[in-house]
Length: 305
Ligand code: SF4
Ligand code: MG
Image (cartoon, rainbow, N blue to C red; front, side, top):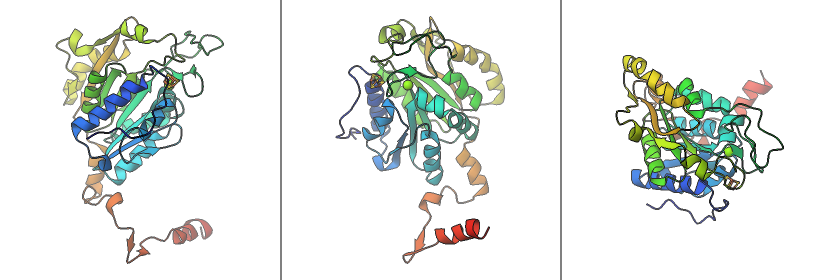
């Protein structure tokens, strides 16, 4: 299956988004997901355009709202593969409350952060992952804010799969995306994405002098956690890798917890036929007549309340 669409890809030459798009398209193809069973939901920003470049039942939504829209889609029809994607500004600035809250639910969706540390679409302001005192070319002075660490925030929020990739390593990033989609629960793949137009500090060269793969440098690296005791035993080493950033930047899978139930599992315990007949599959009309009349609800809840 070819996931490319005829849409003209509107990114600057050399943008890291090209590599991420190729990795996503290859991951969907290798997992053999039917486009009608795939929903890619994107927010606002350069990366937000990705939903037009991938065949699927996709949505381009408001700034910062890819995760709640993806949550609604998944809950309405849990048989779909749902991927929410956006930039660091979209996911960790205006959308950060959703980024945190989705981890509490462990709903089975994949969150992809195209992380270039700037707001590329609006001409290069400092993004939430730009470290303090760094001055990229569009800033009038150095950045005075500390940066958010997306993988550490995801860990604290309850995500059960956490990985980091690099946009120009398409094959390796594709593998991380496949693992994230196959994991049952909320997954994060942070993808380091050079923005050659506005981020003149964290460039391709800057990243490639620092990045390394966990499983290559530490052959006994094992991020899988399947019991609470295993969590306690592995957590200190995982935490050290989650916070490592500077001269060395780790890539790969940091953490995968298969001990926690998903939100869909929890719903199935209180709604007995939830998986067989989720809201998205329930009839909304009989013989052309709606089962629920929105006007009656409006009257009861608003006019007569
Ligand atoms: Fe890519 Fe940066 Fe251009 Fe946006 S501004 S398309 S992130 S290179
Ligand atoms: Mg950005």
